Each structure stands twice: as structure tokens, then as C-alpha cells.
Image 1 (cartoon, rainbow, N blue to C red):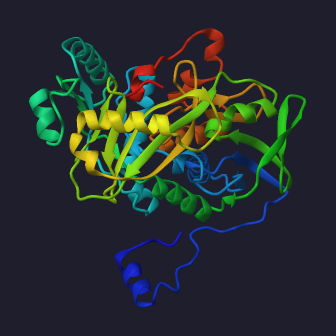
Image 2: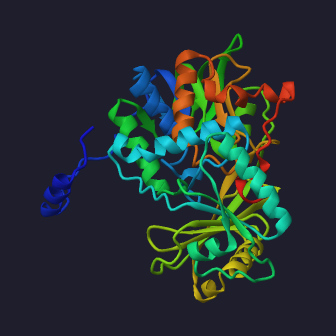
Length: 414
């Protein structure tokens, strides 16, 4: 993989940017692969990259029915954090945040990680006491989090209205948290996977699985049949659809999660701000846009579009906290398809079909989990056993009744 550098940028700029090589290939699918990964979003591409780099498996195909990063990876709000309550979740997401912290260097691609902090607000004394217990649990898990007073909140976010209908009593902050550029992350993994020989095949939809004696042997696609020794599903909101094609069910509900951005303005919001009570979260992007979102839609859907009622709710919630933003104009609105499990914890690892693996049920946490998701799933596929960090995330936990209820960790109720 040819590295980017200041010298290469200057040289190509002087050459009118005419001599850049394609960032990744556009290969034709082969008849057979060692591993086929379904889904060229962040999770699928990261899995392919780590399989090739760490385990030397080079004969890999990533199949994408649309285009690279066109699903949830390109339709999120870029939040990167690890302040989860349960030990299993904390360990997994902190592993992911640590990988994010070195990702630009590791992949030689600037993912624009901005560790500006993630600030969670509380609006009553009772809520503050609950937040203290939550913060203490996170610290016990070995993850950084600090309690902040109302005065400290005002110092961090000068524009905030402290005395709205929901007066701000304080909050907690993970200072290592923040945002990164979602497009850059998926492009970085695509470029790095391609450089290790991975075939990324776009406009190739998986229609059926080839299964013989309880073991997957390949997939039927819109570009023909592809044989494979191992297959992994990483398709976010369509996880239930693909699982059904393979003959088993997953306890996942898919619904839209909307977000929107304003016109760009000068830097004025130095942190990522969230309020579970007012039910919204907001940050400012590297382009100056105000990015805001709230809760998921209340009905099952595979649509990637927004709607006026939730737009109004999100904007009203934002203006409760920062009235000055009322003068901004919205530029665009969109929706991603979130796949939510009963305990809002992902499903990762083995499936009832031999040599078929799954990474889904991410809900609103899939983007922040991309590096760790790829790393642990690569281990799982290479060794045909779950990585230690995802042992408790298996599909069998629903049979055993050993759930990991992270409902509060999303920041707003999903």
C-alpha cells in the first residue's frame, strides 16, 4: 500500500492531481474464496482487513449490494466513546476506542479523530445520584469518566441554557470520547484491505446461502454463485433478513434512526453533548455543521429516509438546550437502519450453521465498535471460536437467559 505523505500531496498537487492511483481495485468475483464477508460497511471491511493482516488469510471477498460505506457507516453521527456500564461492554468498546486512537497511523489515512469529550447531562438531583452510580461502575471497569458540576457544564458549553424547562444540574464526561469522520474510517479500511489482496465487490447482492449437511459452502449472488469455506454476515439493519435466508432467526428489530445537520458555522461547540431526558444529542462536525439526533422511530422499517415529526422533535429538544441555534437552517436529514436486540447488546460469533458467523444487532453502537468488531470477528473466523472479548455476545445468550442490558448506554432510549 502506497503511503500518503506531505511530499506525495505536494507532488500530486503540482501535477494537477492527475496521477493519483485508484484507492482500491474493482475486481470481478472469483468462483471460490476462503472467506466471504457480506457487507462492505465498517464492520465487514475491518474484519477483512484484520483477517488478512493478522492471520494471513488473503483469499477474501467482501460483497456489497450497494457501494462501500453506503449503509449505516455512511449514515451515523460519528460518535466514538467507550463509557458503557457492564464489564463486557466496557472492555469491548474501550478496546475499540484504543484502536481508534492509533487508527490514522496504523492505516496511513486520517480518520479525523477528535477527542473533544462526550458530555452526558442530568436535569434533577435524583438523576444526578443515579449518574454517580453509573460513573462509578464505569470507573470500576477501568474506563475514564468524570462527574462535572453545573458550573463546569457551563464552562464546557458556554452556549447552553442552564435554566430551561429542564434545568441542568451537572453531568458526566468521558474526555477520551469524541467524534471521527465516518467516511474516512470506511475508506481507510477499504484501502488497507484492498492493499492486502482482499476483493471488494460492489453491486453484488447475496440472494441465498449454499448449505450442505448443516455447513455453509457458499452464497448465491446477483453476479453468480461463489463458493466459500467460511462466510460472515455484517449487514447491520438487514441482519435478520440474511439470517432468515440461512435458516435461523435472530431476536432483532430493525427501525430507522434519524439524524440531521445544519448549515456550517464557525466552531462554537467543543464537545459532544447528550441529554437522555431532553432526548437528543448534538456535536459540531469538522466542516462546521451542527449534527443532531434523538431516538429511533417507533415502528419497524427498512427505509433510509427521514420524516417531519421526528425532525421537529429533535430540533425542539436542541433548542431547549441551545436556543441560539434557532437561527440556523437545516441542510439535510437522513435515516440509518438500526438493528436492536432485546438487551441492546450486539450478537457476535457463531451461528447454528457451521462456518457461518454473524456480527449484528449493533443498534446505535456499530460505528464506535468498528475497529474492535473487525479485530474480534477476524480472530473468531480464523480460529473458529469466539474472541475472549465477545464470548458473552453470542446468539446463545438468549437461550441461556444471560443478557447484557445496555439500554441506558445509548445516551437516549432506543
